[in-house]
Amino acid sequence: MKKLIKPRIIFGIPLAALSFEIYLGVVLGYFGSKFFVEKLVKTKIIESFIFDIGRYKLYLHHWIIGLIILTLSLQYQFLPLAPFSFGFLGGLILEDLHRDENWHLVLFNKKKEIK
Image 1 (cartoon, one colour):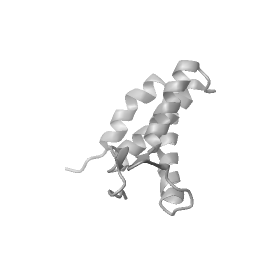
Image 2: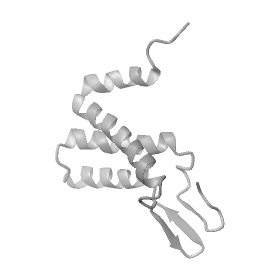
Image 3: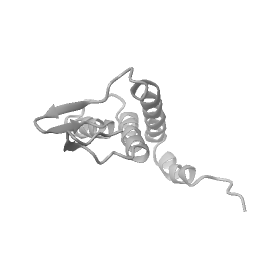
């Protein structure tokens, strides 16, 4: 039997019912992040945030950057359109965790290369 509705759409319905602003932010954050990574990062127009620290490299994935901004904005309340902004940052975080197989590699030995 063919599935008519994808599970991801079903999971989005309660969020949309709770707050359309948050839902819209999540959708735009997810697909905006996907576009950004595919068009700018993977084509090397913009480099990833990888820093050398002694024998190690620190890779600031966009899920980490989004989480830092989200945490600071919750603490200091500096984002405009808070529900939409929180959703947007949540979508950015979800996209990286969902699509990047190396999302867990944050601090690693310089000898190990990531894709």
